[in-house]
Amino acid sequence: MKLSSKENIEVPIEQVFDMLTDFDRHERSAMRRGAEVQRTDSLGVPGVGSSWNIGFSFRGKDRKAKLAVTEFDRPYEMTLEAEMQGMDSTVNLQLVALSKTLTRLNVTVEMAAQTLSARLMVQSFKLAKGSLSKRFDSRLATQARDMEDRYSRPA
Image (cartoon, rainbow, N blue to C red; front, side, top):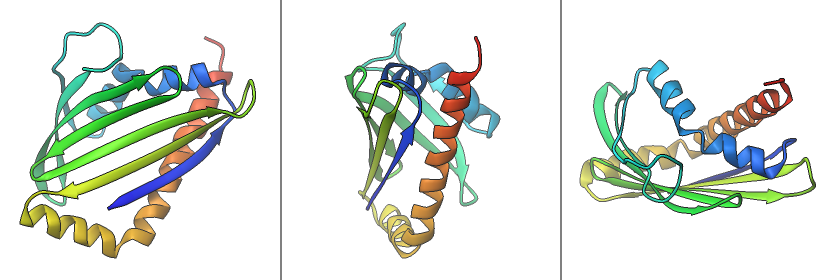
């Protein structure tokens, strides 16, 4: 299954990429939502090889996932791969500078099931793809407005 969305952000491309790769902020945000996040690499900076073990609750069950950065082309693209109990996912983030202060963020998520239970989960996602796509678009728009707010606030 594949989901994709795009959003224009009124922030220069370099700053958008820096915000997307602020992994410490993303870790804290996930923990505030109840996830357990453990960094598993020893890199001091974002890049290929950055990785995490993540535990969270989804549909009433505890889930575990491994997440890793597999492609990193500053400031244009980053790809993350996730493995979660029978399901593999790829998240691709692409940035395009539309002007000096306007950046388009393209996000694509692809999920592939490896087990029967994961296939059932993906099938339920496919049945709800319309509402899932709307929520995905809405969440990306919220993140884009948050980036604009952070950029416009003085440091």
